[in-house]
Picture 1: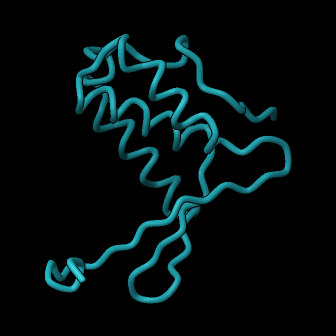
Picture 2: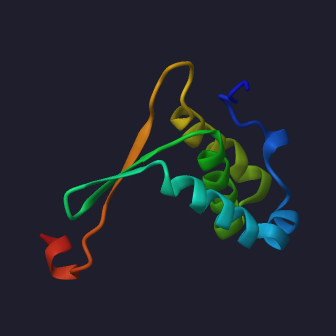
Picture 3: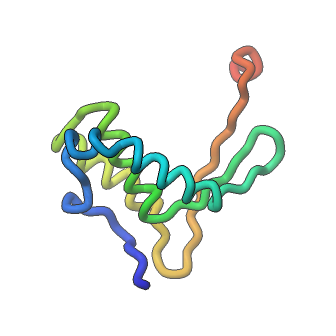
Length: 105
């Protein structure tokens, strides 16, 4: 199977179409991400990204911000570099601290 390495305008669903199936898409990608996640200590989590995880990220940004066509090029430019090419691994990491006072330090 060939991996896709870049999102294009043609990959992105129109806002209304995505909104109708949003729950299903999020459920599918959440299940996928569960196997692409590594916790490092109590506060840091790495997510190993791929085409599908970045597709959802772009769709979600467009859905939430409702920027439409004007926003799409910026989202593709921001998230395409996070899709691995060839034998690359690409990870994003989250720092999750529930305590607001501790986060402020």
